[in-house]
Length: 422
Image (cartoon, rainbow, N blue to C red; front, top):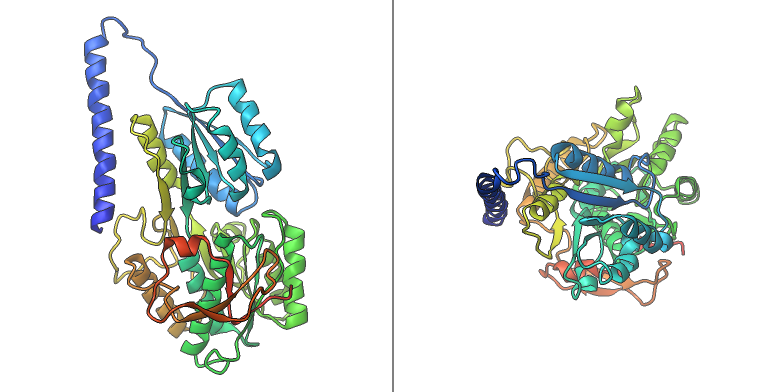
């Protein structure tokens, strides 16, 4: 555990202790007058962009919500699923007018406008926006932001991709080309180059081609995601496909190819999709590893502070090692098993041992920020929202420079090796 994590846990402990002492004092001094006073309750509302059965983004948030609802008897938790981003404001406001909520968790990037417009009208309600830039809400005291960040894991996925590809062509299917997804695509590309070089493949990475389709323009689009996956495989001979889409669709399509005798690999996204299928009697051969989020510790952290009367406006950006009991590098690495708020899905035996060892090594180093994927030199080119190049490739990250939070959160360029069919 590092100093930052120790202080965070100590702070939560102090909050909880203070809340307990205050509650005990109040109970002792007022027992005669209000022996049957109702216990304090927190009422919270979760707004989901997709269905809770998507096995991806929404399912992961819902699992976190259900976990804290079971853990905290003082929490009244409701959710509304399949809320279109353009309808979010009216849906949330209808609920706020119907009854009072202490907290609203808006769990999609596209709910940003709704939160910005509603927060000033309902100052007693605390809004928590997932994946939005904190700067967008800096003048709203009742809005906090939070996110479980994946770019480190996408880099490790890329190592797996570069190590297993036989065609020297890997691809990506993005939902949108917002900065969050762009940095994940770039991290995947950097990792794929690393993996190919590590294994001495594809001209030590020089002949590796990385394709990104045009965006799906939807977070939940399983049919379209399968179509775009087929486009990459059939037209460009891509044999590893990463993605940002909230279902198992891309992984399912990869498995279809594998079953027909064509090796195509993919990943888990937000949930451990390999274990999901395994529990249903199906072992996926196309699954390499993947990025998994556990929102439970983040929701626990935010709700405990709210319950204790210690709400603070904050921006949580959970990366590898955050909310984990032990942050330091481990000999018995948990890479491929649950740990903290973000972690790797199980590592396939189809990843060569040399690449698996490298993934585990860098997983542990990234937990302590001893290795960062976005360390220069890196060349790239600015893109528009469809992935079209807006300039020729040039240096985006100087040699030995490590990008910080601001550069990562506003990334609008592709690595020079990424080929955009758009």
